[in-house]
Image (cartoon, rainbow, N blue to C red):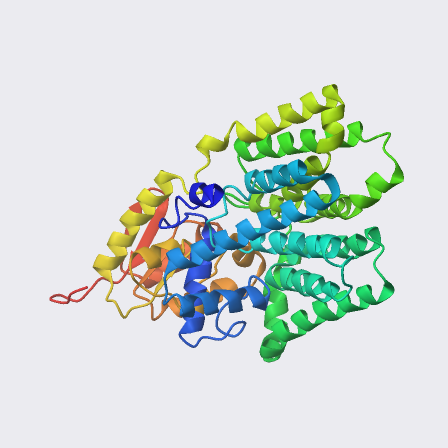
Length: 445
């Protein structure tokens, strides 16, 4: 309860993080009849967008309610962390695991942000917890473990490197052979159910979810491949705590390592992702921060028995906690100030019925304007690797009341000049340029 209050303190405030506004606008478009893949660019697998659309309809368009639902999923990940580590290392270790999960970099600062990363990893942790805690009691629970991991992959492919951990968890608890079959069936059922409604747009979905990411290696812009010193200090703290646990466990019997084999597999999967995936956004680091948190917590019994290693682990956790007060949900006030000023210009210079194109997707939301569905997600990755993206923007600009350029559009060769040629007026706010036609005399916004 306390964690929910602390992490949910900003539920009513939008995040300036790019993805959240894209997802809000995508949910609105899908609820209005747009089709994923054909009209709305699919940057994530279809289950995530189905979740967004369903939540948007259920909560009648309340962004705050959707953030609250994201927070509930995050807290569910903490509960799963507690159950998993409690099973293998005791009650105190379980409580530490829940706390470290919530404090992990890219979790603590995104728990109340509409995003796919934390939910995907939380679902994997849930799958491993089910396999570890419930499958030994009844093999059929492997169906649920498989379904959870299938859902994780269909929320975000980031979860894919963690999938083997579920099968390793079944091995660790000596589950019967049929449990593996149940897990495969459960996972396949969710994947098939998520994909079937979109078979007609399969090529577009694959290109958005995976294709352009392969082409996007080396595509950089402000914020891409980034992260702050706070994030990396926190991650280093978790790494120190986890490493101290491994050192302390050096002399432990094979059974100790077998019990933690699934967590170790998650760590390895996360490291593979970190070193292979490009470009690497800061929020992707949840794929390694959560496994490290679980590993550090699961080593509590041996850390308590070995003072030197225990001191190193405490030092690492202090590093994790030290920067906590200055976290701000990836929403620096300056980012809001400029975008709010731009939104005022857009609201004043466009009619409510006129679409607005923006590479800062929060601006149309603040201005109470809609964007053409195909231009909702114009990220650095898409603009830099999809050769059709600039042409789509220019085509939609013919009927748009305004175009806002403050991010990826600035890096697209020739795009700014072509926008200037299409719009008679423009204004500059910081690094953001607003192109608009203006309202006819006597008209009202």
